[in-house]
Length: 213
Image (cartoon, rainbow, N blue to C red):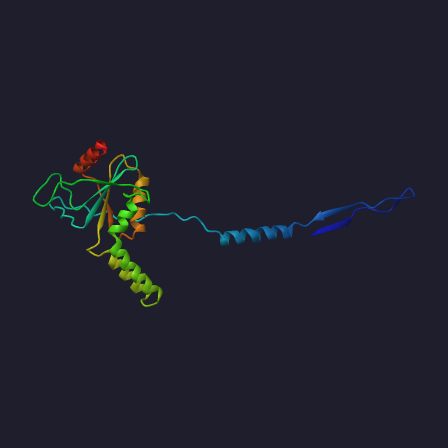
C-alpha cells in the first residue's frame, strides 16, 4: 500500500510554507502476488517429456542355426528419395521348387494413391482390426473388464495367423522414413514387426528395381 509521510512544516520568517509530503510504496503485496502466480504456473504447467518409440530387434541366431521360412512375413525395404518396396514370404534369389524368384512391388507414403502404404496395411491387417474393434465395442459396453480387454488385444496381435513385418533399409534411406513406416504400422494395429539387417541379395534386387525405373 502507499503511505504518505509528513516531512516538513512550521513557520520561518513569519511566512507560512506549504508542507512537503513524500510517498513510499509498499511492494510486499506485489511480491506475494508474483510468488503466488509463479507457484500456480509451476504446478499447472505440462512439462515436456522425452518421447521414445519401442522397437523390436530379434535375438542373433547361433552360427549353425538356419532361419525358418517366413510363411506370414512381409518385408518392407526402404531406400533413397522416400522410395519404399515390399515383398511377401521368403526371399528367393532365383526360381526353385518352393516358389518363384522374389519380385519387388512399390508403395508410397501418400494416403490416397493406389499404392498407398496405409491402404496396403489396412487391407492386410483388416481381420485383426475387426477383431480388436469387436473387443473394443464390448469393452465400452462394460461386457469385459479392462484387464481382460488388454489381454485379449495382446493375444490377437500376437496371433500366429497375423502377418509379421520386417523393416529393412539400405544406406540411402532416412530415419524419417523408418519412423513413418513404424507410425503406419501402429496406426493399423500391427502387433508384430521387427527391424532387421538387409541382405546382400535384397540390396542387389533393390538397386536393380530402382535402376530400371
